[in-house]
Image 1 (cartoon, rainbow, N blue to C red):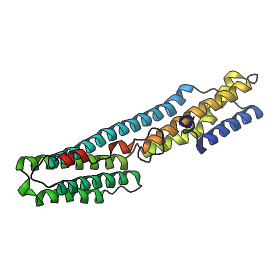
Image 2 (cartoon, one colour):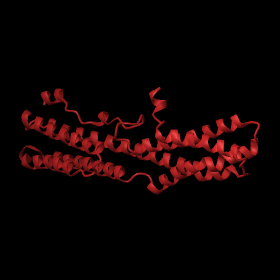
Image 3 (cartoon, rainbow, N blue to C red):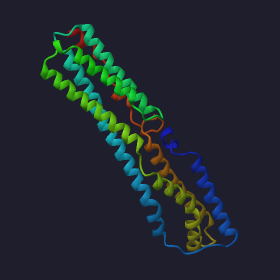
Image 4 (cartoon, rainbow, N blue to C red):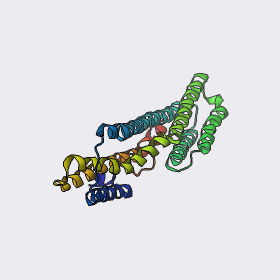
Length: 252
């Protein structure tokens, strides 16, 4: 039941009450007009579908980037873990640094701030550790580690960029304004087409159409920030956290 109620909020109640009020006024003052409903489809449905598709695309791109982030951190860890010249304590230190990168990065995604400076500093710590232990790490392994760190850095910057730049704000504002205007345009047309003998049908159709439109808008708003762990379709960030691998660390 929770997943069905997640799209219902204050805006839903406002639109439903507005539909009821406009229908009542239309019958009370015998007001109606004939308007082509195709106009409403172009004015409301198309922008809503566009923004929802854009939000889903952003979410899919973030999932891909987070997968690269986690796999690259694992690859960095493996490059250090298979090195027989490094001590177990050094390998454990690397694992802790990588875990700190993951924690800091997901902290940025969950917060309202979009400044990953702390994450960049922790990536630099891994690079400094690599430089400090060059005597124990071959050039080929060092190049691989740098390449994987580059992938980590790229996935972080891209993900933060996607979070900062959402779907067009003006288009979302336009959709919301037109949804609130919808009852004033659609319901008088229903009254014109159905007349006064089917008032309950006009009430039902007006409420249903208004509910559908505002629910679609609420779905798009929930998808706009897939990191806050509030919506039902938010990204499960815990699945992309880097996790230390103690068995491999012990074997190394």
